[in-house]
Image 1 (cartoon, rainbow, N blue to C red):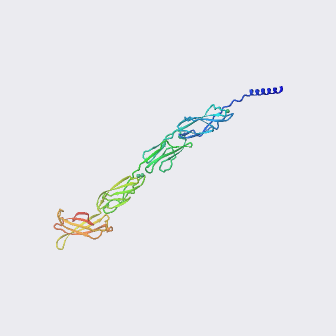
Image 2: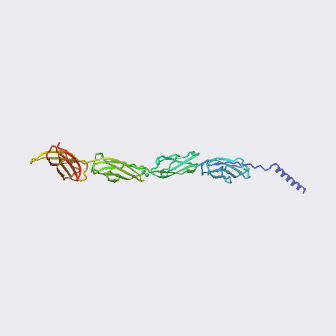
Image 3: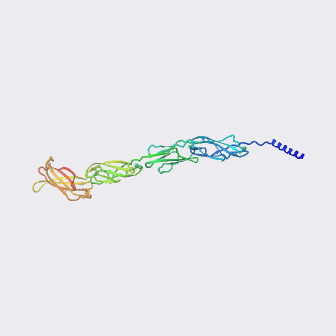
Length: 397
Ligand SMILES: [Ca+2]
Ligand SMILES: [Ca+2]
Ligand SMILES: [Ca+2]
């Protein structure tokens, strides 16, 4: 019995000796390590932080303590990674401490600087509302990290892919210009929407005339407005005023004037946005039928009277509207043109056709002379379809 007690004492002593010689080892602190998948972004962007490289030499990392430096609450989590969305612009120092399974905290923080840029400001430089508008964004601090630009001009045109771009609108309207930029995988849009209001451009009127001067009455003259144009649309109406009270519609028209005069032709064009423009030209319209020559011959008739014969050549420079009747009044006057002696009205019952040879006809008028055959004046008046078309005074040459 005494021996048993001695053995127990030895064991106790041995145990105490062992415990005293090798005290429990001190816990080693973990070390924090982190990576960020991006270090620049625009407001609203998120980064993923990974702390899987953190280590504990004598245990395990159990807690990850994140501080994003942007005023958000510090977070202690068990996961090795975390996402964080930055809602303010600035440069933020993100820090990570870790704790091990014995509650020891790393003595140094791992860190990363995250730059969060404000959303860019887009602008449009408008000189003319339709042509060569320059769109750009401000010089953002992280511009060099932007990998993609997509400008959508709101008019169905192709998307532009550069930071600053010119665009011309083909037609008037109000357009919303959208931009999407991509920075390290983050899509962002400018802080400000751009709306462009493009004014309609007025059309341009142009008149051309289908023939060269001289222009004659009763001869159709063609006019064309085909040289008119509208740069941002189409011309939907051509309205003509011929200066003699008559009007017409159509891009090409034809008009014959009844009376010789100077006329101003006005063309008013209207585009598909109801804008108008006008052009005009002035032309001189001359008589289409003229007395080309009057030859006076005199003779003594069988009764002994002095008589005169007028050969009147009439030329048609225009185009008689239809075969018509020409009448000539040849009236003899005394030498001072004040006293009428006699009128001979000669009707040519033939027709004036466009194919009349030489485009002229001759009519003879026979007149008694009266007293002074050599001093006699003859007033010749030519009527076509009852309308006076030319007249003139003639003497025997
Ligand atoms: Ca440890
Ligand atoms: Ca227009
Ligand atoms: Ca237009």
